[in-house]
Image (cartoon, rainbow, N blue to C red; front, side, top):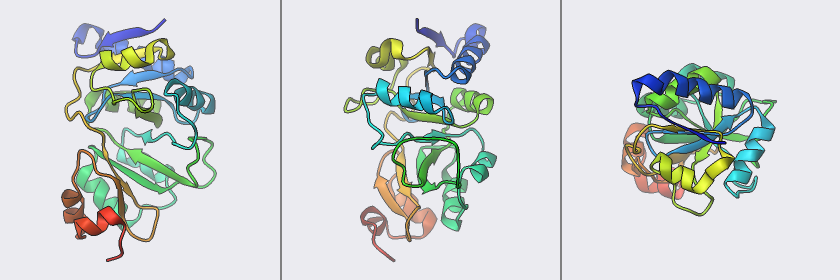
Length: 221
């Protein structure tokens, strides 16, 4: 049976985090608040849990699961290299609503889907998410909705879609931003925006000193 915790209530906050940590470590699914939309997550290194996450979303491995992290230091163990562009974007926008597609470190024991040697990473700007991630380590987290449906911006909307597939729901109130993160692909020769979300191409271009239109279309500069 699913448990719902109002993390903004000081009297239940610690119990909520403890229950979510136990669920993640036990290979179960949790719903957590982030700054953009609510996410459904699990231990990124538990391949059975990742498969359960994909099933809960009615989604196949052709749409790989992103990874959320709770500290900058975690990046070094997950990526093949921290390029200058990645470092610039991380320093400018993390924690925040920017997801980065980068080459993953070789031989990581996870199966996030058909990643072709890459991983999508983000450090969310939400205290509950950060607290949980610092206890669990990297989590595979996707938007808390059935694939094809609108991402949930509240805990109750997530529960309406995902129901008993999820063991623990962490209610952190309405999502501050309410739209998905912007995705920048750094796995090619030049940065490319795969999805323009909470951050605009102009904001990304200003930090990278690149033409926003070129970033949108994957052009060389």
